[in-house]
Length: 451
Image 1 (cartoon, helix red, strand yellow):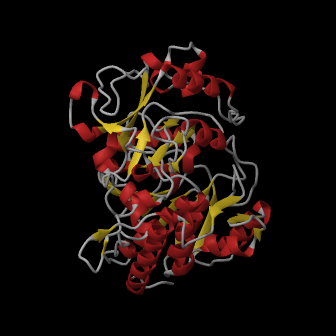
Image 2 (tube, rainbow, N blue to C red):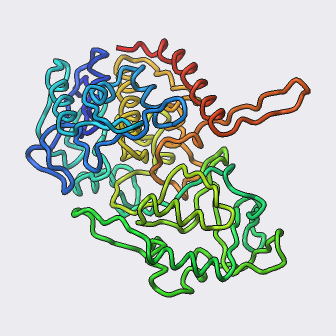
């Protein structure tokens, strides 16, 4: 067995993991099928190609969770964030980059690192590699042969499918003067679902807005393969005015405590994380443009002021059920010599993929040295993203997730001079999340032996 680490895939996660391992003095074989073969989405021969956008989203670390993750990565010595800062272009409060320049510099740095050996080769099975540790960082478009082999190793029914992502809102932004807790026919716990009622006029207006809304077009490499269980809400609306009332918006088995009038239709929101700070809108997977989602879904009574932690979507994706399959260090429970990193684990987005790649690289370097890694504090963006990958409580609804403050442990209330609790809200709460995270991060970095 080769006493070094193999990484499959030189995207954001794979490049970051390779860099972190190499900087800690360990040899890496980085396998990348480009330029011998390209996925349907990739065109550039360089590593860390940004396919869908040149934006790494908000860079405001004091008030935004992804901006906080930027700052944590910077402080931790991330290759990807360092190059992003070098190649940034004007984008208001966002961190956007010159895509070609960004990928070119990442590739140059990886190629010039003596501890990283780049091997241009498509890996079709994990069995063909004999290493002390293998990190699979093949992204959301893993090649079919390798995806099939991974399936054999993890015993998961499927890897590649069109994931149907429903929008997620912050629970504390729901108006409970209109909404209420109740399960249909009072089955299960009352707080399992939050209900938002619509009368006939509101429902018909909602359907009309769905039909007229702007949709996101599929990429060339994506062909719609809808299943009846995960139809986009706008596709259901196209099948007839009453379709949604007999689907995800059926009003049966519910009693509105705010009105004697029986709801004509009901939108339900289900718990989305262990802390119950996030709620997903049941059955609302969609290809509507994000601006349209925010506009139309705020027409629902109770969601007029909804804050969205994630907006809906349907696209071809490849990810594993990490909470079942991986241990807390991203190793396959059934075969700890195999690790996973990046979007294949169920994180969503460039920055999140980079962060999970960073963690995989740090964890792997510790294991090769015979050390036990220090887990990132739960209060940090690193720790909260890792917690999502381990959220066994919501495994039935496990979906790729962007970093957001709803994944963080809640901020404790302030005790006022008269002994009452004051709960932080809005900007003050976001600032508290970020301040606490960076304090915890600094202690963790001292233990991590940063390169």
